[in-house]
Image (cartoon, rainbow, N blue to C red; front, side):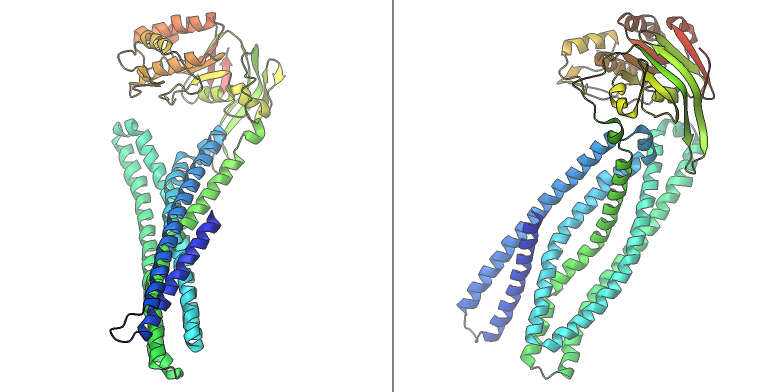
Amino acid sequence: MSLKISAFASMAGLLQGMVMVIINGAAEKFPEKSLNFRYLLMFIVCISGFILAKRYSLTMTASLIQHIVFSIRLRFLDKIRNTGLMAFEDIGKSQIYTVLAENTETIFDASRLIANAGSSAVMLIFSFLYIGHLSITAFFLAVIIISGGVSIYLINQKATGEDLTECLKKENEFFDGVNHLLDGFKEIKMNTAKSRDLYEGHIQQISTEARDINIRTEYRFIDNYIFAQAFFYILLATIIFLLPQITDLGYGIITNITAVVLFMVGPLGNIVEALPLVARADVAITNIETLEKSLDAADEGHITGSVDFSRPQTGFDAIFMENIAFSYMDPDRHKVFTLGPIDLSIKAGEVLFIVGGNGSGKSTLLKILAGLYYPHNGRMLLNNKVLEPAHYARYRNLFSIIFTDFHLFDRLYGLGKIEAQKVFELLDIMELSDKTSFVDDKFTNTKLSTGQRKRLALIASHLEDKPILMFDEVAADQDPKFRKYFYEVLLQDLKQRGKTVIAVTHDDRFFHAADRILKMEDGQIVNG
């Protein structure tokens, strides 16, 4: 496809050049008030061919680039879902959004101009060859001047590319701040100092720096654009003023060469207009490649393999954690928090509560236990067999988890066709029937209160029917009636069905609902 596009773009440039030659020839040979049908026919054929070839190259380029852009997006999303949680958290959403939206759109915008500039470049080459046909002296004079101009242009463009790279870094920092503003909206509404510091001390500062770099970059583009335009007129002036002084060319030849140079205005403008976007596209491609390398390095596929859904992990007898330790690191690779060493056993069918203060390591323990984090030391055992990295993908499918920062999907993905009546019954039980419904395999409303969203998540977890259910403060934000139902009815029903429940909770009034209670402090289990 790309070769075909290049061929048609080149054909459009050649035909555009032929149109110029035909018009020049016709201008020379036409007697006054006489119509030369041969030149007119050649003009019609060439201009028609130019229009068809140009349209084909542009439309096919647009189609090809759109396919590439959406292919890149899907490829990245596929790699993201195969990325380890720790690596995903390190990469951050801002960089991913920038690549999937801004960078791919930049490449598409550049491609439209590149296709046009390609045929224009062919036309310029043809024009230079035609100038060489008219006068070899004019040809070498034009080549010397153009070579000097292009060299200066490329030197300026290198500095522009460096500014674009720096600007991209600032854009990522800016969107990090935007994410903090959006994700922490409630917190900043409650703290004026935090709101002011986030906005004025971070977002506004980064935005100003990004703006200044953008302005400087645009100034460079403007300077290059003006330089290219002025350089064209320098070339034109050289042909008109200098060429007659160093050659004995006649008036007609000088006029023809001048006409050719004037014909080059449009194609040269197309190329100059394309260059800034080409520079931006080059930076965008580099950014895409950098992120893709990060995702490839974090791809769990080579560690865990793909999940064999024909042999799902359907049950277990016991899970053991032996001397498990895990540490969070700062950018300088210094430990900022360590969980463990921990020794823990969990038996099938038990209800286990985990308690402890904020920062004690409860959520980290859940993530390691569920296989979302790999322990740095120690080993995990499933049914007395050591859990190797290649086993993790199937192992994770034992769990249905609702974290405190859970995401509520509007569809029951992964469950196939669900009987709507079964969902309606669960909506009644969770007292959500008047808040949302289940139509066309999706919930009609997910914009609910925090407590209601957690109950809707419980419905999805119930329907997944996994052997182990993890609940991180699910009973929080619930009214006393549902909280009592959760501990004394729902959890006991799950236990009777042979399910294993691991719940983080602070509800000491319902500790009697657990078979065992673990207390955590400073990354350690202190009792249980």
